[in-house]
Image 1: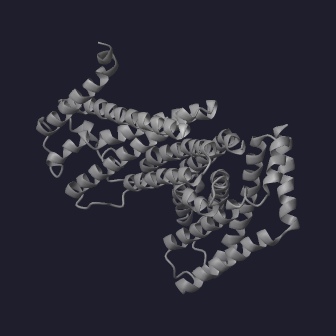
Image 2 (image 1 turned 135 degrees about the vertical axis):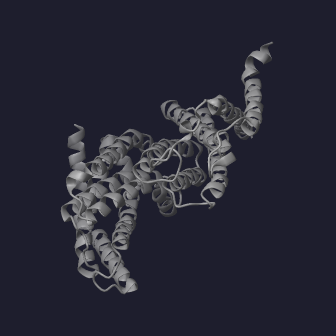
Image 3 (image 1 turned 90 degrees about the horizontal axis):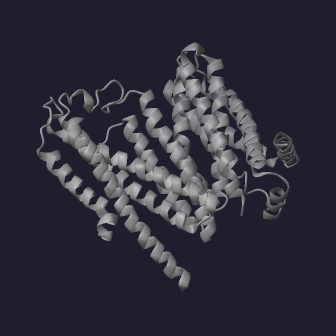
Amino acid sequence: MLINEIRVLVKKEIQMEWRQKYAIHGLLLYLASTIFVCYLSFKAKQQAINPITWNTLFWLIILFIAVNAIGKSFTQESKQRNIFYYSIVSPEAVIYSKIFYNALVMIGISFVGILFYSWVMGNPVGNLPLYLLSLLLGSIGFSATLTMVAGIAAQGENSATLMSVLSFPIIIPLLLLLLKLSKSAMDGISMQENWDEMANLAALDVIVIVLSGILFPYIWRH
Amino acid sequence: METLKKNYWKIACMLLLIYTIWAGFMGKVPRQAILNETVRNLYFHVTMWFTMIFLLGTSVYHSIQYLRKSDIKSDLISNAYVETGLVFATLGLVTGSLWAKFTWGDWWTNDPKLNSVAIGLLIYLAYGLVRSSMPDEQQKARISNVYNIFAFVIFMILIWILPRMTDSLHPGNGGNPGFSKYDLDSNMRLVFYPAIIAWTLLGYWITNLRIRIKKLAYLISENE
């Protein structure tokens, strides 16, 4: 039952995105221009930038895009339509479908991002599969945490400010874990030696998703 | 007799605090290079964090109660616990900073434990922002209690799990000995454990006063 509702809602999100493509185009353009601005302002010859800076800069770009992309999850649809959803589907289905859909978007954006980023800024990553895995776990974590925060921020009056103020401190534990894992990936350390970090990240993702599922019904009831 | 029954813990709190301050400054502590007398900070710094976690944890309990029963009183209580918790967090940060100046040589070092706590404070300051941005009473209570639970879980991950994964200068982390290594004859324990109880009771006491003020203010605003 719940799975069914989630499937329908995710399909609805994808169709909405597909019919008015400007949102996803906007995100891609935002990604490209941010990366290009970074490239220009560092005047980076390829491989000239410090690997730690390379890594941190990339995650910051992804973080800002995530806040922008996910921040509008609850504000883009009208109040009447939200009441309509409220009356026909369970709140858990709403939050899980939004998390799932946002995770899909973030995975897509971050993979396109890493391609474009390595194109202009060079790619000093030693263990690429592990780096991509950290991107995958990061996208899921960003999506889960920020969707919940977006739900909270959408209730306030000045939701854009609220979104950024609430999301940045709360995303830091995840970001620190991600920076640690992706740094090991850059140094070319094998997957076997990073099981702990991956398990920690996956556990954090699961905790946030479950917590969102428990708490969201209280926000949704308004 | 009735008042004594109700308030004996306040007397206990005061006696324990006097004992903590007297024994904390006058009692015997082990001599260590660099640490010297600063080891006494154990009674005034570490205890602040214990109290803060107790207060924030109790606040989460009342937040859950609010979400279950929608009783506005639980919201007031939970809010009061967060506020006192923040005061104790600030005190913990200040005493820690003082200690760092005399042992590490700097007011603030780039240490995971310190940074985590600073981020934690930001998370809880954002809680205040959530509260002030909602005009409607019920909505404000519901959203801020949801955020409080969410923030507490993230905060616990931040201060318990992350600093243990990276190197840290902080005692008890990153292979550095905590106080139990030095305290061979358990003299410090005799002060440390009562100190935890004393400061926690003080936090509880202050919060109770805050709750009473908040309830009265709520009644007045209801009757207007």
